[in-house]
Length: 252
Image (cartoon, rainbow, N blue to C red; front, side):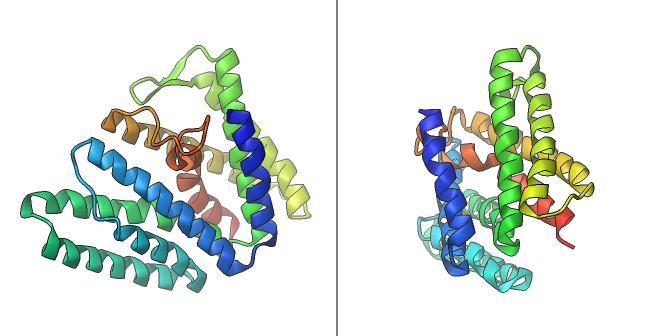
């Protein structure tokens, strides 16, 4: 089921990235960020922290879409979303529940739409290169970890992740970045070695960070929306950290 889901999803994502107009592409990223935020909220509920109302998912999508206007627009949209959240929770939530609901809402803005919004800033070929780096690294880590993994990487956070898998994922990402960069960017860039390496490390930290959130909430997967992969957070956890890092390193 894992392979079947990837076989359907990967071509769709590639076609969307290559051919979709800017508004459609941004709207798709915004929808994904809203789904991720909903899963993030569900972890808060399971942990007894609480969550903001479902209306706030619209604010999450609004912040992500604002990336079409550049960084200043994202900052303005984020502040507007934060103020709106505080006012609405002040009027509707009990004093006891307000802190957890507001904290989850503010955390979701930083974790989901702002990080994924960097995808909207980038030229599409560079977005594809980022996807290749992360996809190849994740696949190498998963399959090599299952076959060769012996030493646990972070047993308190994710018992199944291994040192061997992490090394394989790192090597896979760097190779994918160098080879993919030549193909997608049309030039050989030696700086892609270290850019891919740092992006790979950021992605692995993103994976572990999401595992930490799930362990804190006492769940195995953030949801079951993607058969064989878990939820949106499970599938995109590496991208939440890798996307802004890749942008900062690659874009002048």
